[in-house]
Length: 632
Image 1: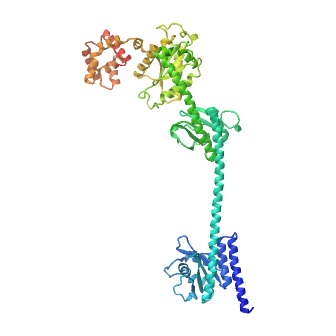
Image 2: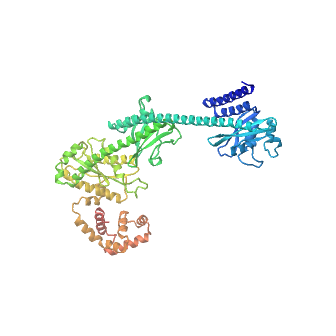
Image 3: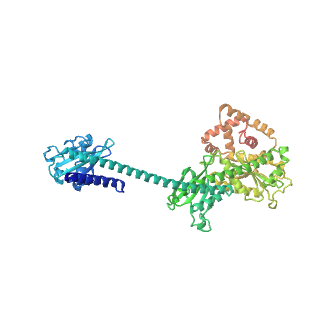
């Protein structure tokens, strides 16, 4: 082998070794930046350059920056990348060799930069110490990845063969760079897939644990353990105390984890105190965190929703973050199961209330077929109709009398629930049912307390049983505690026979109506409180009394209808306020002279004097008859 052949053989081995080093770098664990430095170092070693750099475009393809280098100082790299960036395309000072090589895909060489009058990088070139530069494109698959730019300290003419060798190296380097990029993207994709797989495993485990929670809570519902069972299961799952409250803030159930020991966590001076917030102040969906009024322990809370109505709320002391996603999901599941429990309880209660309502209706209408079974049906519901009962009629006071009351379409039901809850604690058990918008209670009489004994006569002069009056007062207090409203309760005399109930109910309802028409509220009333109206309410056939009232007051009634005046109202107010013109004027918000003129017209129409006792007696009786029968 000749010396020239031996040199070519060594050069070939060197090139193949350099290519192998690039391939090894691609297959290694190094970064793309280290590969770019290796490309620059290889070019210097193979072709004897003093410095080399690899320039790559920014994402917007506006400038080229040095991303790999060999022999270049850090100051030079900063100067090019920051102070004098290589813009792609012609700039104010012309176009750099690297830009032309990148844009055209061909090698660009400058043998002496000091001879170039418009070379913008002369300052940094002098600082780095090079005079000649050559830039070749990094081509792969028909596209340019960047440039391989090499420098010599002295002036140097880059031959075609040298540029061709450098281009060959650049092409191999481009393949290595693209392969390394693909490897990095692949590793990134693998990392993302691995993270996604880990996330899916975590979510699957979370879902499995969530299903276990739902199963545990559902089993509580299937076993019929009620709201208390849901509270105990949730407290065990969260390891925190749990409190359920209804729509009015009354406790439904409370529980604490077994690790907390015995006792009520929400009772006593050291117990937790849930925030005093109405359901309207907190969201109807999701688990949220609220603060106590004093800014102490935060609370996690969730609404229990039934048919778009918030019927209850669950409270858990402690911040929401400490519960984690699994704890929040447990609360959401518990809220759903609690809603089902409340629905089941309501359904059972509705059936019970319906049966009692039907029983009361049959007792008040006295249909023969129904009366044949009414005593037996009452006994199955826990009521003894062989015992005498007083009829109590409970009615919500009108909104105009109770400003700001929360009366609505559901108020009668809520009143019924409050009265029913009170009655269930009594022995013998009263019969509580709804009749229209009123709640009717048949309160058992106590023979030992002087009430009328069952089976005995019920004389007209019999008094209202003291126990029934006390029960009415208890009912009013129970409703006031449960609801932001007041009720008035009317009490009848004891009914010793089944046939007495219709008349007792009619009379007691009439007492209640007259009481509320007079503007009285939040009280217990009985027949004797009404005076002459009470006597009139006991008449079975009031037709003759009504004819009497019409004969006495017909001129005034006719005058008011034709002229839209208020003579009858003025007369009624005048009699109700001790024949005082001044007090009547004050109540009616008119001048006393107006009252005097109206009363004078009444006297003219009736042909009587309001100073005559006999005339006043007849007018008072007629007004009472009209009031009792609702004709006024």
